[in-house]
Image 1 (tube, rainbow, N blue to C red):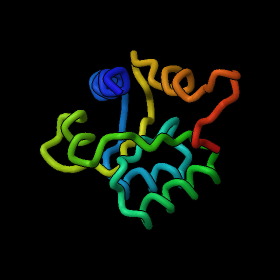
Image 2 (cartoon, rainbow, N blue to C red):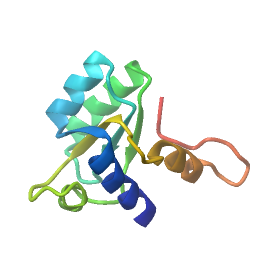
Image 3 (cartoon, one colour):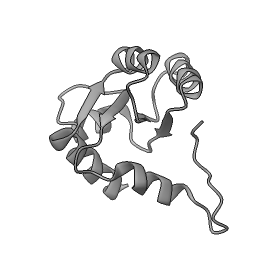
Image 4 (cartoon, rainbow, N blue to C red):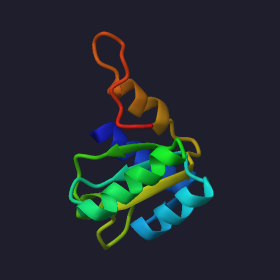
Length: 114
């Protein structure tokens, strides 16, 4: 999880993100997102909406092991962040790292995407 936190920090510094479930859903509807990170304690109704819209728009999503306070802290915010949308990953390679971690020993993709 340390690598993902480092990648999130890099995306925040060098890329473009949207923070919060309302902004994530809005950007999903316009098709601007490459990846969505959802905190593990995101309310179920919001999580289901984000997952539904991400599947419709073929956008990858990942449910983190961090709660919303930890995700907010990684983003440099003093408040909880239930969802983080990545518009441009900047100098980070978070997409490749998450895809690598989601592969099992047989090489099959186990991501919760699409």
